Length: 230
Image (cartoon, rainbow, N blue to C red; front, side, top):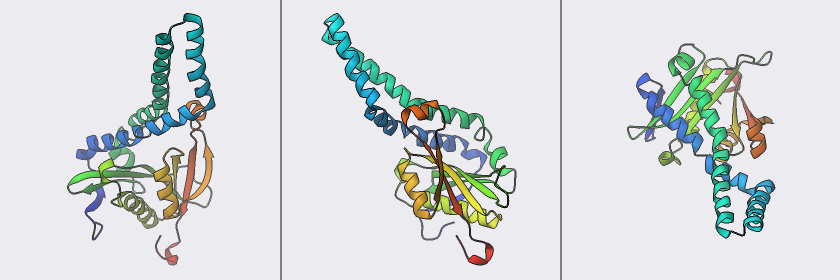
């Protein structure tokens, strides 16, 4: 329990499952509007939104058809912006989040936590060992940090990350790594402020590349036991 705070952090229990999955999904789909704005700013999008209605107007002479085509195009672009996040949610629900107990709580070096605020679940985070850690380094990867919209600004995100760092040090890990995207600016700012450093950047899929959304890789080097706390 974190002292002097209106919240506490505990290990996941199976009764938390529905709320955890809701928090995770909501947190991901929250990035759709920002992704949509990115799509609208792309030069190709501007040319299509301008060119298609003009072409239809010239061919048909109908303003109604021209305006209708733009509405159709905007709906298509919204679905395009939603697709990568939907893809990621579906993948996670079929892999590590399909059985959280099995994925995170069966082995000693992994865990999944929930944060409660005023009696309600308000945040989640998980951590799994990196199987192909570089030689001489033992890495723990942070997954699925998410805080409910109504609980932002309470310090929950930082508290959950610090819980992972403390767990990693207690388990003898030398580094904590994670991945986030260029759309998730609040999370990126939080990680950098805590002390994570950028180590790489790549595109997760063709859709992410098309939308110009890159995945940023971050790392936090844990001090050795004699150096004091993280």
